[in-house]
Every structure is written in C-alpha cells, then in structure tokens.
Amino acid sequence: MFFPRVILTLFNGEYDRDLGERAVLHLLDALVAIDEDYLRRHPEIPKLYASGVRYERQKGDQEDWHDIPTTISIGKSDCKVLAAWRCAELRLQGIDAVPTLLRQPTKTGLYLYHIQVRYPNGYIEDPSVILGMAPP
Image 1 (cartoon, one colour):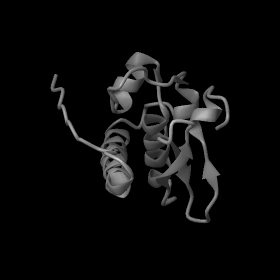
Image 2 (cartoon, one colour):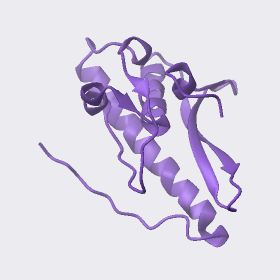
Image 3 (tube, helix red, strand yellow):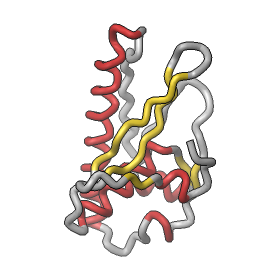
Image 4 (tube, one colour):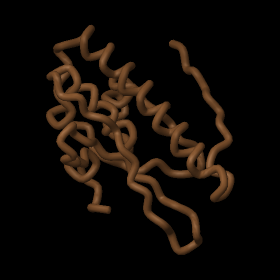
C-alpha cells in the first residue's frame, strides 16, 4: 500500500483565504478524478447512497482525504470525500457535476467549510445530509 501525504499551509488569515479555497478545490478535482478512475475499473462497486457509508465529521486538525475503497473499508467519511465520490458517479453518467464550497462564518471570525455537489443547472445536492449530517 502507498499512503501519500500532502502537507499544505492554508488559510493563514483573510489575505490568503482565496488561495486556501482554490487549493481545496484543486484537491477536490484530483479526488474526483481518482474516484472516477476507480469506478471505471470497478463497476461492481455500489453507488454511494447504497454503499452503507455514513457521514461523520473528522475530528482534530488533520484532514484525511479518502478514495472510494478506503471510504468503504472505514464505513464513514466527511463532506469532501462523499461529495467527490458522488461527483465521480454523476460524471460517469454524463452529468458534469462539480464539488462546491459552502463557507460559513463562525463566532471566532474563522470560517467553517462544507463541500456539496453542484449540477450544471445550479442544483445543489448534499451527500453528507443524505448520509446523516444535520443540515448546515
């Protein structure tokens, strides 16, 4: 097994917020592409909503990014992973869905980010809410 580790310094204040958000979107694009490749190779894999995987927010400061087989083995994941998996499924069905960031300010002045799926017509789907998260 190969466990790549990417360490990025992101979100260092308001000045760099846009760079941090762009970096997250680039990483999401990469995860969607990885998941698309996996689903092409493994068409027997159940769809996200039939997989038994549930939403669970990651704890702590470290953000783990799981591909589909890792997510299935763990049985749970957070919004970025679930949204990437769903985007990959939709793209393989010919729907050009993209992960999108929902930015919510907190009382501390920082932002909480939530990842959802945006369809070409603007419709927003939230795999995390469908899989057990309270609506944002």
